[in-house]
Length: 142
Image 1 (cartoon, rainbow, N blue to C red):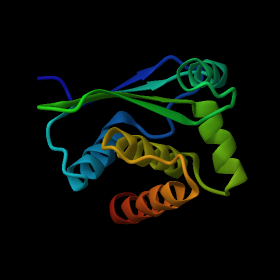
Image 2 (cartoon, helix red, strand yellow; image 1 turned 120 degrees about the horizontal axis):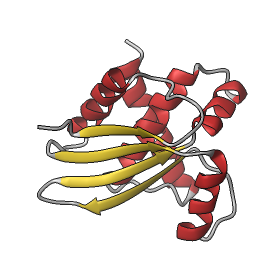
Image 3 (cartoon, rainbow, N blue to C red; image 1 turned 180 degrees about the vertical axis):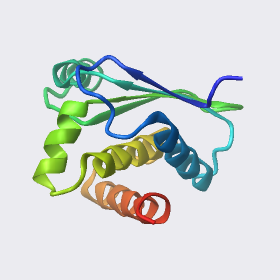
């Protein structure tokens, strides 16, 4: 049987975390959010490719570090998470974080989106940030 979380790199930069610890973190977060049956692909793309996706699917011409697409909610949650290692690297520098922790943050963020969390309003963004910190502290930092 294949892993419930698979990683594909279509970027020139490597993932900041190896697939095993990244997948383990992702599964812990999904289980904490009540999802035990999952099939998710995490795909690294270039900064420009993610910007193009943001423009095409969300009508926003901005750079982003992560985009999530829910394909099927049940019985097995299926989804795709696209990320930009370039943007993760820039964000890590801007926030004085390690690239590995910043990648862990976008995995948590992507998982939350797949489970229905949104960050369109300021209140939703604050809730999402609190969720990220909670799970990073619980599953990544210790």
